[in-house]
Image: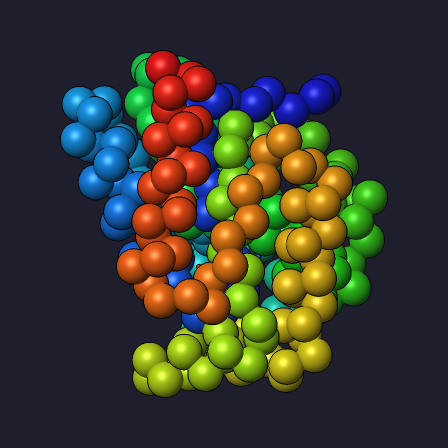
Length: 212
Ligand code: TMP
């Protein structure tokens, strides 16, 4: 099974503290202003069951999952999200913006955690089956991103990882972007939040023009 790419499916990726929330709000406003239906969602999460799996993955007050359990949990959440939320919205013609998607599993569970990339690709083919038309990667130096993320207060299980883990996450994302330059737009997210959002909106407008 090859992946089905939906032009109206846009994903937002990046390391910790890359400023995804500000960008997400700007993209949502731009799409809504065009009069289209917009569904904005996130991973892990986006359905009640998938949000529960998110807490299992990120909360620090229970048994930490092994690397394999973590990988299967993110894909279990994604399987639910794809069938219950993403495909129904895309099939009725809505624009969908997801704060993270499968690229995050290649970066976190693959590049950073050392998971088998071929196995992740198998899961993607068999369990996910769909791909975004455009992916915005907010790229920020690890030290800058971690300082922002940790300045926000409570730290989840993954945010508590060491800097070299996040260097591998960043490298994993940049490798994905290099391998699929037609899908990815890489934005320098060390800039001020407004400038990052403006660039993201410019990419979106160009994409909307080409996929009206
Ligand atoms: P965030 O979306 O609020 O940044 O938090 C989600 C966390 O989950 C983040 O640390 C990245 C991690 N994650 C994975 O490890 N694998 C995945 O496939 C996804 C979607 C997220």
